Length: 141
Image (tube, rainbow, N blue to C red; front, top):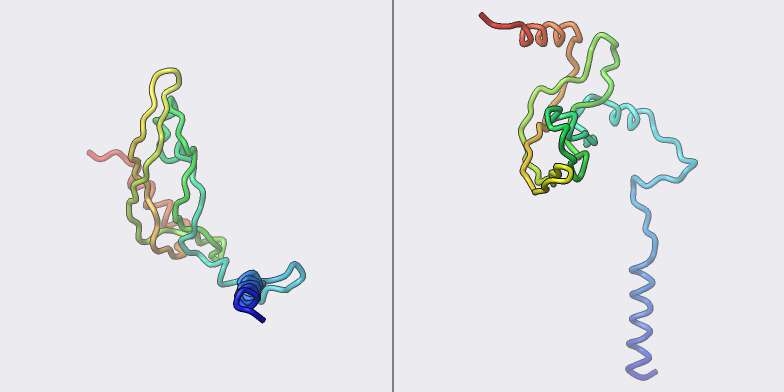
């Protein structure tokens, strides 16, 4: 076997190894059963990536079109296993994203928009949350 043949054989072998399907530990087939604790842990109240409409965050901007129209944000979501509780943020921070804002038939520009992301969550009483919201909504004298 000459050098070219050896090199070709080595190349083909490495290509086959590179393209070989190596299953990941968490990779599952369509007929596999996901264990209860994994299902439970994934459903817990925690920050998750969610798609949020920009107009939901900025309702006063209805005269504009945004590209993209929604953004991926980390927000609290998940199950609390008690209907008297809800998944609530306990810590948050602001993140700034570049968005294209278009005013139909007039102008378009790229702007920076700030969004709130959640970094920690916990299950809290719905009643407690409602009372806090009412305190914030009452006019101050």
